[in-house]
Length: 271
Image 1 (cartoon, one colour):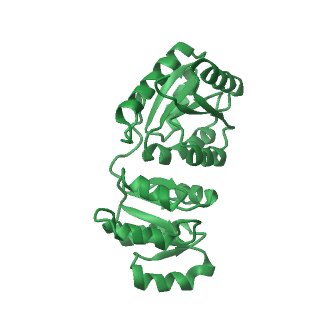
Image 2 (cartoon, one colour):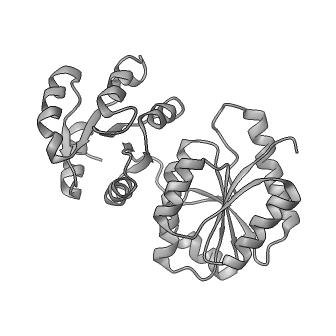
Image 3 (cartoon, one colour):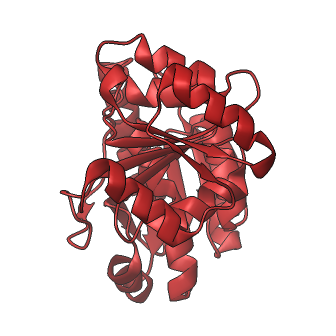
């Protein structure tokens, strides 16, 4: 194989998911990971493994279960990841109606392995062509329900539950991307823009002040507004940091929706 893809396979149709996972591994020598359609599990695997492709094998998902897959949207925004949905006509229509994922490629169920491999080859070739450029091949469904003019908020926190909580609170109003480390935040910002960063103050390896200092050293990133996310126990320390690094403020966790939106509007203005 000229290119070795890393594929995450999930969805309620466990039989098809296992079949797809096994065939991709045995027939094409792709690296495959299979996980249950659990929002938190998918989120952690996406950020730990950074797969090139996510294959969702549907089986009469409810509206809420379809919306759980929206957790992929932040990772899609980070770079080279394509989303395939294996569905019958009814599941495809429901997915299109209730998903907020901007770009998806649908494959009919029962799935043709030939068609799947054909599309995976396109993804692999595209990855080879762009090399380090993070503008991956995306699919055929451009979601008309997803706005393109909304402000983009980048949330940085090593806690999965906090990230999902904040994303849930804000995605009604903003385009929200999430990452789990300072290193991932800087990598994201080297490829994508953000109108505001919600930055966890205490993180392993690269904490919030270190990330903010790195941003301030970059001629492009230094102008991005930053608001710290902090626990009540670090509040006094954060206040001291405000006078040194001069972020746009802080919010004590767990944050309320009204507090988050009010702070963002204070910094960026009305939506």
